[in-house]
Image (cartoon, rainbow, N blue to C red; front, side):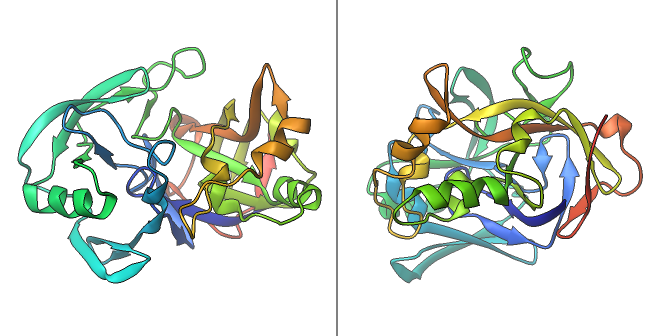
Length: 271
């Protein structure tokens, strides 16, 4: 089995970026979900309630992050991947978690508010803001970015292929917003993984990913559809929740060599 694709999502719930290789950090892949849109009170925003967030695409140019509206590409904004200037610091809320974030300046917030037709602000997670992984599945000291709950999400190409054979109209893997895709193996075999390695880096499967309505959002149109969740519910429902994909934690202390992964890297399951 090998890594077939790597994706990061610099701003939570916005369009992702495909990479040939990525650096590993304690919070997940470098630059993954270090930014997030919130309301003025610091409550996080996602496609679950604002599906048009899918239309805002991202790319990295040097040390800058570029965001544009795919329906009107001329509407774009650029700012540093690691911003140093902020309007204020604020406590933000992601699900049951709270952590400290830095709020970007008014010009950036105004741009996003205009694109999404609602008041919002862009926040950044600084290095000194530590959000713990759920203690039921994480180890002491493990932290996560603004991702839903875990540093990295893994999904098998075979699992996607199996799902698409059951659908009248195939869907693309971007609906599941995984960081790492891999080829080889059997459908949904990642369900049962424990410890494994990608090249020289060690990982631990923490918890199957519980799916919300986001997979039903067409990432190109920003519109909600009935599939694939309708079909997934017929064969991937466990304890009343649809499961697809495996949440991971990077075992930094057990890894060797440079903390990177790349497309084509071999995956070896632990014994």
